[in-house]
Length: 504
Image (cartoon, rainbow, N blue to C red):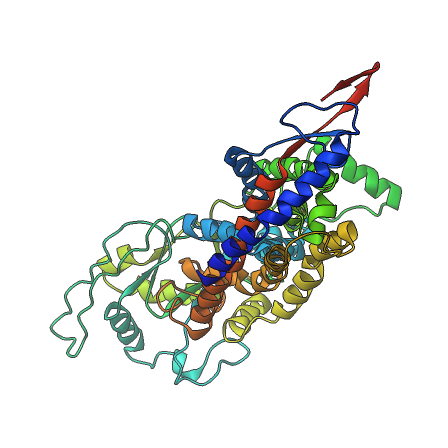
């Protein structure tokens, strides 16, 4: 609130300066051949400018900020709340929108040889994995330990009883009662369990088929390098480079060999078209940042503030092309899922009905299952690559602003330069840092993030939320300053000479 108050006070101090600039502009406009009462030229006789209204400010904000933020790519089966949160991050901190687009580009899912590998790179495949308690030794290469293996002579029964004695985990978004049956008399000490609270539709990811797991088992994404049994790409004849190019260009006109496994996906053509339209609109906005707008405001010019959002549309356009969209997440088979099914098969009828996994689309190879276990127990290693790529790609808007303005201050007020540049710089750096926060408000099977409960209370997540809330004032202050500049500058149209006359 203090920052916003300073912005308002700064705008009041700039009114006298704006009045002096208006008088100077009126003197230059008198030399233009076309002068219409109520309109100015802002030092360029080929422009005709009128006073701006709040409707003009709203149109500028919707067309140059909100629409660009809405083109941010979404993950497979991303929840409604998480998607809205992503858009808000991109709106307040453009670096977050760039980070999401870079993450989609780095998957290179489009170039995977099979449908299953495309889905794995896109993050649309998950598998069942047995959770290892903290007091159990680390798993071996096969992914099991001695503590995981049930003892002979009733070990299976004990495992099932322990599973029934704890709350069930629901992997999908089906509102089904998970009431645990009353413990039997020969099961002394068994804990009575309450039914699990179902995730809200706003935060729940959709799982293909039916997936209901007991406690002790998790559903996690498979790594992007995962391989699958019986999923080899059909052998292609040796072709020269021109022949390969021709084969790729004419692929849609030839019958394709039937794949071993088909995973349904689509490309978000609406977002792609919107991204293209917004790019063209923003390019025209940057092109119109002329007249004496740069002379008046320098690098703080409101027309230059759209550069980060145009970059969001471009990066996310590439991201939508590289990573297809999936409406649901698919489950693939694993040895841990086989073990779970064997345990459930030896239990009572109610347990068989409650805990089941159907609709699987493939099976992980043994090395891929070892990779799942290794990644599940450690921190992902691709975060550094993602951060560095986002940093070098996200800094481009700052270069664009410098290229247009040479970082000359013009006649802008100090508070205008401070707010716009703080918004530009912090929006880039903070956005890259808080971009992943959307994953923590979603009940989504992610590596190292296997449930909604407990995520929001982690110190790192709370710190990120506090930083995002605190730094949001810079974006709000930037919006206020831009609105003031638009109202002061007005809305301009280009005059064109046509057969000796002048037209808009």
